[in-house]
Length: 303
Image 1 (tube, rainbow, N blue to C red):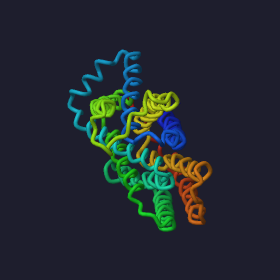
Image 2: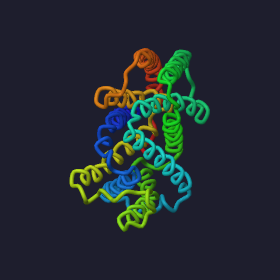
Image 3: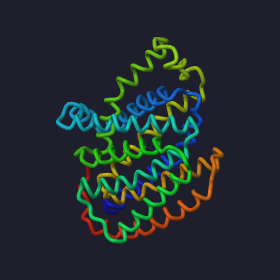
Image 4: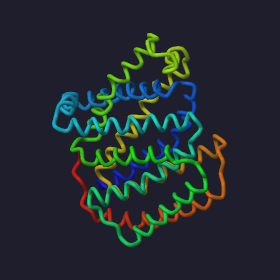
């Protein structure tokens, strides 16, 4: 299997996991967002340390945290943390439609990032598909009649994260482990203050972890839900072009949107029907062209 094909299937795994993740985080709707975010960080770190220990690469993690790329790792950690927090809040607050819209906007921004930052070229067919998808997203935004700040926030933070990851000369497990390690002191500090009741009134509710067994197990499982897709995304970003990566990502918001409509009872209007038809038409046009181009590109070395 070529490196491009490996990246393609890794990205499919990412999209399915993230696309169905609203079901998981809706089950944690009674847990404060920051507590969920903190547990995501801590349990992910344990998983990453276990993986690196099995690979005999724990020393490499220390090198990554003290090496010349630490500035970019810090920036990646901050952008992905903002994205995580905003997404969890959107799910818990009942804005899954807006979160799905954000991840529809993301591929369009990723295409622009690929052209402007990495010199990736678009064929005429691909450019037409991007314009069609862009018009569909604009139509959906207008038809929903909601302020898109959640959608824009998710799209901007994730496109920045993808661009940073593409430029990091570190393997996928190592780079994401370093990000989580940098976030761990903040997460652990918050949980300690919350457990001791030292946070200001109204800032944090009593800790749910340990008080409710099902909730505690879900919080622990958040490490797997977080770590595995991030590893796969890092792996895919180094093997698949930003434009192709962006268009593949449409599977994620489609699954999110189906969760919102079929499971959570959010509205499905004529605007959604029109926009979905246009978006999938654009995806079919773009993917056919992008995949032909990508298969002609020599595979990248393993990271």
